[in-house]
Length: 495
Image (tube, rainbow, N blue to C red):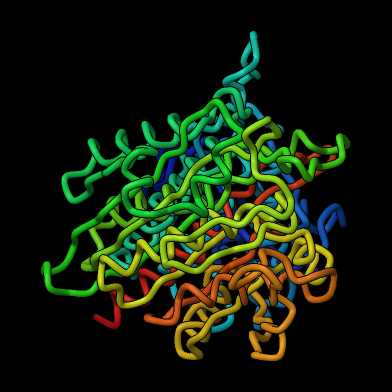
């Protein structure tokens, strides 16, 4: 979809649909008042009929404006004019998208960025419009013999008569984030027989080819063997698909500037290995690579925005399948860091990939390292599907991620990473066990990873509850791409 700036006064504007706000108790926004004057009171007379009250996410489509170059008007409720919160604004935008999807409108002009949102500027408001609209219009139809009918909307313009530079910045950010989210959704929604470790590697190479500041490196199993990645390679032994260690490097700053490193779990299908998962819902284990999808989406967005940062994305990718050569409960493997690991449950395989990738990250002399993984069902139990879990060894980094999550409306919640939990990972036969029992499963998984991150500032995002939706709305969400890009934007602004 095309996103543009519209800075034409309403009296001269031509559009198929104008999107304007109505506040609580049928109070018209300034744009609605202006259009009401231009239409000889049509807007106020329609509102007074009572079909829209102005509550947050109310919508009403007016399909005919006589003697006007504006063909339709979509009224959107924003609640109380002086109390519009960021989350309510995003809720209203989702309702706007839903209303547009049910029409044959091909282009529209949105005036919602001209309304006040508590503590938010025009750049943020414009960006959110694009993110919300693009998310609602995303469709996955690659694997259908007859692709689904495309929605009509092809162009959305954001109206502004002032602060147009700020609006343009928001459009640029919104497009980059939306495209990154769409990329993450698409590769995540692909089935495991399409999206293999080799496919992920090819996608990384394709992204690098499109951007001069990006380069991709793919390590094969023989390369990983030479590096001593015995933990990572033990997971891929049960699969016929070769494992890949995928690295994307973005150079937007001087070479001596330490990079921000993202590490994304890339299990393109997780059957659980010998510790086989239950059959019900196992199809959703194609989503065990959503962490890697987020890394691809965030690096692409950074390249699109030409951020003045150095960023490295590391994706350890494999399948986890049952096989005669697969890991067995009780096996002991040696990680790249030299620590031996007793595998008590082969379905706790993500941490076996990540620990070697986190050790590998040290070669880049990172400023910070942030990993993201659909790591534990315990996180879904603890936090549900609203926030991602956040743990880490550095308070400043965790605070920065929390603040970015609030700005991006991509929530996280921090869990403790106390030494007392480390005792659950004791093994009688190796340096460390790969699970810590039923209690505090999300925390003990992060405790395991923390053993391999002592040399740098590190944070872990457990996205098991937020990376995809189940049921009738089954599909990837693209999270935490908005959070990651907001974190990068904040770092770029600070730089």
